[in-house]
Length: 136
Image 1 (cartoon, one colour):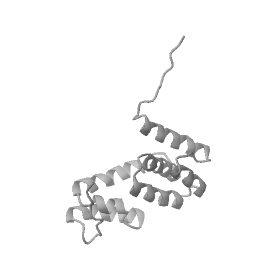
Image 2: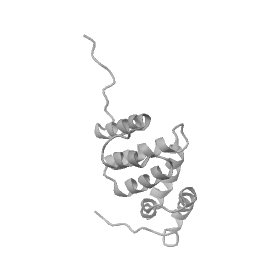
Image 3: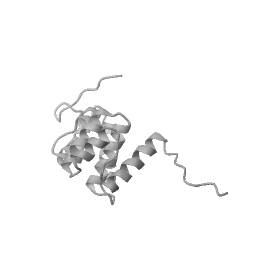
Image 4: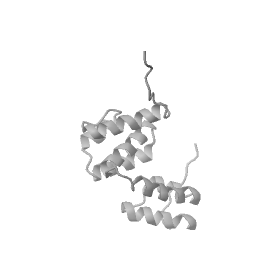
């Protein structure tokens, strides 16, 4: 696997800087995953609109972070797991619930557990959920 540089604002390609500024503004820092993605302006410039869409829906921030942390852990994605652990804790997800997700278990909070279970199942089954039952 190739190693990509983790850019600072100064070292990033010029075409990536506007997106890095937007992420800096949103998080208060540039996440390492974004700093590495900034090597490709096309990639990092695609992230900011996705970020806006994810955070523009009807889920609360703890619910969003539960889903994103579950996704990161299920996919064994180190940078996103670290980022979403931090963001989940920052946005009020209980430390015990964060640890449960990181350990592959479900949060104690029932709504967060339902979201986490669904996210994990969708990844593990590649979106192929049984949505009907055969009538006898």
